[in-house]
Length: 318
Image (cartoon, rainbow, N blue to C red; front, side, top):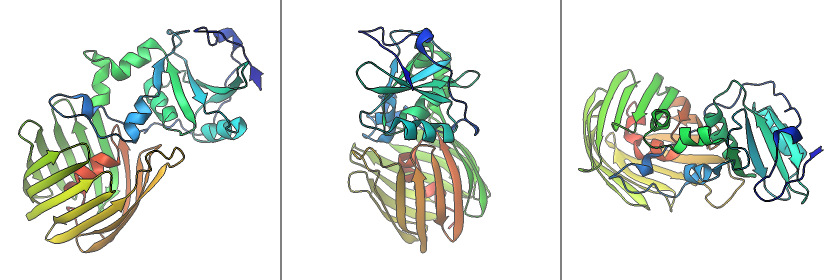
């Protein structure tokens, strides 16, 4: 175990850092998050895991130009050996450091990698209380007006479900959803000012209205050649209504306030078929079964909130 001393802002220096422990697997690349709540005139996003994750990322004021390493501050009382083992097992190149107050941190080597993506992935772990990044990396994530901030406005959902490939892109600058799934092209426009979603998906015209509040969102109109009306209540963990000429009900719990909850279960029914999914809040993967079909999709720069809000897209093949 390495031990370093620090005072005030000079928390650590490069000379005090030992070489990072190399990991054998690929670096975690799909830590989903989005900044949709910061777009105007959209109201603020509901308090959820992605926002608590982003709030952990801070500028390393002691060394704001240190771009090849991230520093993760570890919650007091954690077993640092287990923390490092888990991080390296998930593809991070992490080494443990100890301060003179008995606390721990991890130094993560991101040489040759996308440091912004790695910072978000690291921040998703419940035992990481803060992630210190360079000024450049911070601006890549939060620097409005910078070209680099474009990337965090682009979200994707890729994989397979409903016995069909899934390749969907959410553009949160132009507010469009494009791509394809259910063996059909997807081309939708979201108008937040009018509260409307229009276009085409699942071989059907889409004409929906939505009403948003911090507690819930209601979507109603027509899609999948069927009347649509459902409400997602984040606090209750309940999506209920109808779509595809059938009742729709999904129950879930994001585990807000429970630091060690990383797996979310989604259960219920849609299109007269059972739904049983698991969502990994760390890597953005959704797996399980839906519509008598296996589900294996990865969410990047978005999360379960996006999946549920636009669920009419994903049950269209049922």
